[in-house]
Amino acid sequence: MDSETELENRFADLIPDWLEALKTMASQSEAFDLLNHGEGHAMLLLLKSDSGLSAGEMSQAMGITTGRMANILRRLEEKSLVDRTVVPSNRRKAVITLTEEGHVYATDLSAHMKKRAVSVLEALGRDDAETLIRILRKLARAVRTDDASEAASLLAEQAPDASGQSAAASAASTAAAAVAVSESPSTAARNRKP
Image 1 (cartoon, one colour):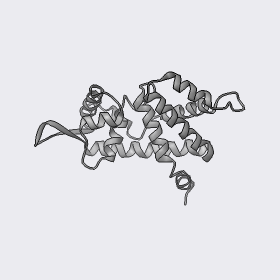
Image 2 (cartoon, helix red, strand yellow; image 1 turned 45 degrees about the horizontal axis):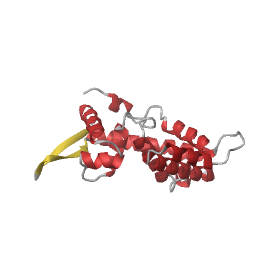
Image 3 (cartoon, one colour; image 1 turned 90 degrees about the vertical axis):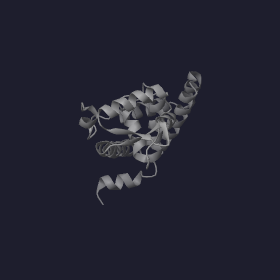
């Protein structure tokens, strides 16, 4: 077994939690949404869906307004990455699915994100990775409630490390670096003009 596969297996049970925590934070605040204004998150959501989703289901799952979701879907349609199909029994409803090109892009993006997650989790080690995920979940809950004082108290709960920085601050810095993915294998598809 090669070292990359070994590392992925070592953190396999943490990767979904890690990615979910990062996606939750990204969907709650534009400051953390580094996936081209939600496009990447929307595509990953569609990748998980067998039969497609409505725009309303997607906006609810991503925790964003329907207006913002409409803009994301318009941009993805312009790039030929998603299709809207009107439901015959309810002409006011459309089902969003990935195009063939969109499926390739979303699959590449998912693999790229997992690879980055493994890299960061490996650098942190198991204990710190679990701590980071726990802290990110707490921060995501605080962001969802839009309660800045709760977020501040959650950060204050963490004891400072040897550098004097709290574990949460260190974790947040690490998470920001992990999310700031340079170029995914399909950046060209995402940025392509129709």
